[in-house]
Image (cartoon, rainbow, N blue to C red; front, side, top):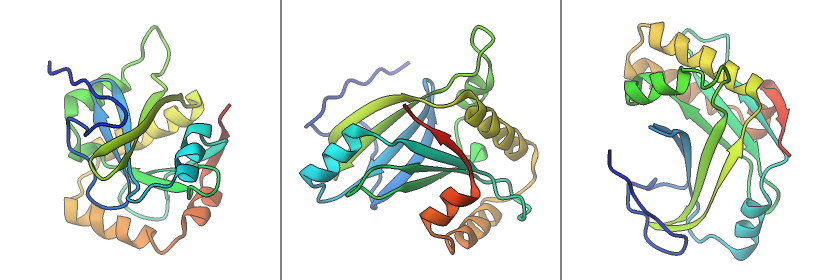
Length: 178
């Protein structure tokens, strides 16, 4: 197992998103959201540190490919962010480990890293509502059982981007974060 050390204000020792926005990866430790915010302002950094008060989980039911969408409503001036996940594109060992309960409970921790280019500006670990994580598990299991191609996933995902992040938040199941 490779252990990476990283520190805020330094280049991140792994791959970072190249484009503005967020991606969700599954690691040995569970889900990790990577947010790329080029030109990050001090006010946006403070909004990230304050964290989000609400979030939503959405799996659109009117499309044949199961797509997992998380939406996090960070305070202004940081924009709300949506991120999707395709379990079939992730390391299956990490996905399987995430799906396994720990001491009879779902693993609900998510790590979030905030970047400005290659530089890690902030990070946090958040505990997601267990009900939200169970919905995520359902979508992951549906993805693993489905027979879609990467092109199918990308085509249906692109169609979802006709919705704004606020619309995705409204269509999802809402949760509060403390």
